[in-house]
Every structure is written in structure tokens, then in C-alpha cells.
Image (tube, rainbow, N blue to C red; front, side):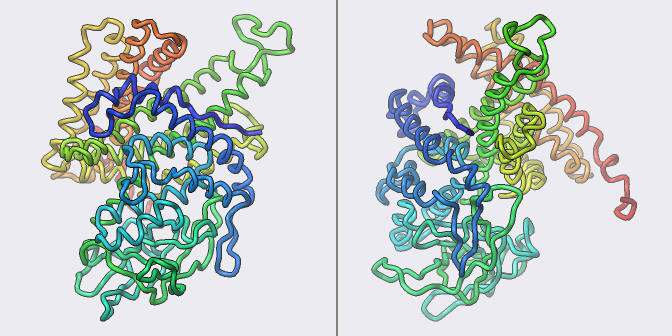
Length: 592
């Protein structure tokens, strides 16, 4: 039977040893002492391992069924959803005035990791609702917030985001969904949206759709797009539910993975909606959801890799195959466990070093979001905006790779459904595609985020890395194995950025042809910085006589692996970038 154990100890290490959240000065963080966060994470881990994880395989096998206009979710999902409602988990980091607990976004991020690892498809019902609430809080009127947020926060109602259309994915300027204004101030929404996660289901009494549509007078392209609240059931003035709105699910997609989540084609046939935010400024409102969603998808990258790694590790310790080349490790048995073999160790270390580095990177980014929101820190906002495409693109690519590597540990048993390894591969794959395919993330990074505000945010990142190296270069224990590799990787990143600056204006293809490599180069430097910070924290804990010395020694060994075996990939990515556009664009379209 598949199991999942929430990595509470590792999460605590990142929160307290590495980020020192209680001493960070961010409002609300002073209350996050070690005992408090441990209690929250222990409770979340229990929900994840005991309620959500046991439904992961069955939900994958059963999937969702469209039945007379209603999508039936897999057995057990309703009971699990009620457990989340009763525990108040969706409101953990949402405002107290609407019924939330008001904790920092970072705490919600750590809890979300556990829930995603346990059951990614199930968690999307809650996760998308959380994102829709974010858009309401940022752009909704006081009346809209009062009407919708408490119900959505409590999960009595859920939320969605409706962007994609059959002919319109990334290029939203091609959108055809229309919004016709009515005399009472409402709009009639007509059009079709596809790939709408949790678009229809039987878990909540109402579903609040956030729908992009074009209203008259906005012009062509994205300039004419507005954002509308379109509920499944209309909401009366007293907050009760009224008539069924003219929105329906046309079909549930059959997908490669995340079978337990209903991915729907949604038909809007003159459905009543109300404008959220300013008219013709829907893209700005939607990106409030998209940025949080993209960080959440980046989290999915390593969070799905975590249970895949846990299963592969257990299998490697249990499965007997061959003998260690240095002598029998299990002389009483017919063979040694897989884990004695160097190539198995390499595989496991690649997974482990990525997952732990990505966890630190994601938590750090979440703390920047808190710093931005709670302190109005524009530098933090700019830095995390720069990081969003790296988080989303790099971590989902590497997370899928880690899930495949975990599957490889099982050999042929990984290819059959019984072990569950294939589900993690199938589920992880979508994270590379939705919320902006990873190629688009790379283009966003190079084409927009690098030059945003005159390039000051990428320069701030370079200064951050340089500052860390300079502050710690007197530490011999860090210098050779952590700081020197980080310095070399950072120089590769700066060289790539300089190449783009020199080539971008006169030969845009030269920059864009290297965008994907740059996203990965940037991701490796970010994880290298995180591993250097984690190594410093682990050394300090050992020097202070920490009781669990083995944990910190393992942390250092894992970090050394990343710096020695993974971080040098930056040189390869730089070499590719410097070839420019010629190798990529040499063939004409008809020659393929």
C-alpha cells in the first residue's frame, strides 16, 4: 500500500534554521515560533497522510463522471472535503474579518505542500478556490467581498478561473467570450471555456467562476478583456442561493493524470455575471490569481516528487538485487538491497537534493510575498515577481524528471499501476503545461521580468548572491564546497544576462532561443543559493551541539552532492545560450 509521511522536520529546518522566520521582522512572523509551526504542520501532516493520501490511488482509478449535468467526484472525496472544511484549512492564511485565521502566506504554503503531496488532484478543488479569493480580495468591491469571500473561505462554495478557449490558450487576445452590459449593471456572459479545473463537481453547494470576457468598447486584443464573477447559482441579496445560472459543464476531459480533479468544458449561454475590478482591466485582476497560482504550480513540481521519492527510497531499501561491488552488504540474504549500488544512490540523491532545495526556494519566495503584502516592500515584490517564472518552469520540469527517476528505481514494477509510481509521473506532467506552459514562462522571464523596472530586480538578485558569498567567504567549511561553486554558477548567469542585453534589441531571436536554458540556469543558481544557506544553517546547528546531528550531517552531504553534481549544469546552459539563434532557426518551417 502506498503511504506518505509529511516531511515536518525538513519544513521546520527551512522555516527556522534557514529563514529564521520569527526573527525576520515581517509582521505576523514573530508569533511563528518553533512549537507553533510544528503543531500546525503536524496537524496538516496527519490530514495529508490519514485522509488525503489513502484516496490518491482510488481517485486516480475512478476519476470523475459527468452525470446529468453534475460531475460526480471519486468515492471518499466528499468526506475528505468536509474534513478540510471542519479544520478551517482553506482559511489558514486568509483575513480574520472573513472567517480566516490570518496567518502568513508562508504557513499556508507549507501546509499546501503536504496536501499536494498526499493528493494533488483533490487539493486542486481547494487550491483554486484560494486563488479566486485572492482576486476578490485584491479587486472586488466591499459588497462582493462580503458576499463571496466568507462562503468560499469556508469551502461552502468553491472557485475557479476561466481563461482558456478552444482556439485561445496563451494568446488571450484571441478570446471570443462576450459580456453584454445590462441595465441593472450586470452582464450576460456568452462563450465557451475549456480545461477548467474543478469547473463542475459535487463537493460544494455553489461554484464561483472567475471568467475573462470581452465587453464592448475595450478595443482589440487583451485591452478589451474584463473579469467577471459568474456563479453556478445566482446569489440573492440576503446571501441565499437563487436560480441556476446559464452556465453548464459540456464534458469532463479524459486526461493523462490528475484524474480525481474534474477538468471541464464550460458553456456560458447568456449567464449572469458581475464585473470585478475595472472595466477592460481584467488581465490585471486575473494576474493576481495567476501569480499565486504559478507559485502553487511550482510547489506542485517538487511536492509530487516527494511521495514518489519516498516510495522509491523504501523500495530501494527493500528490494534485493545483485551484490555490492565492494562486498556483500547483506550476507545472510540471497542478494543485497538496491540502495547499495552507486547508480541507485545517484538517482536517489538527484531526487533528494532537488526536492529539499526546491522546498527552501519555494518557502523563501513565499516569505517574499509576505514581506511585500505585509510591509509594502516593493523590492520584495519585484524580486518574487522575477522568481515566479523560474519557480514555475524550472521546478515543474525538474519535478517531473524526479518523478520519472523515482519510477526508474522500481524497474519494470514502476511501469505497472500496482506500485503507484506511474501516477506520480502522470500527475506531475500537467504542472509543466498549465498556468502558462514552461516555454511561455521562459519567454516571460527573458522578455519581461529581466528588464522590468530597468532590470533592477535581476541586479538585486545578483547582489544578493554576491553579498551572501562575501559575508561567508571566511568560513572554510563553506567556501570550497558551497561558495565557490555558487560563485561560478552565478557568473554563468550574469554572462547569459549580458548576452541577452547585448543581443536582445538587434536580434531578438538570439535571446529567445536561449530563454529556456536561461530559466534552468537561473533555477540552478537559486537552488545553489538555497543549498549554501542550508549548509550554513546545518553547520551552525552542529556547532551548537544539536541533538539530531545525523539530520544536519545528511543535510550537508545532500548539499555537497547538489553543488558538485547538479549545479555545474549552468555551464552547459550558458554554452547553449551563447550559440544564439542560428542553430535553432536554421531550418525553414517547410524543412521539418
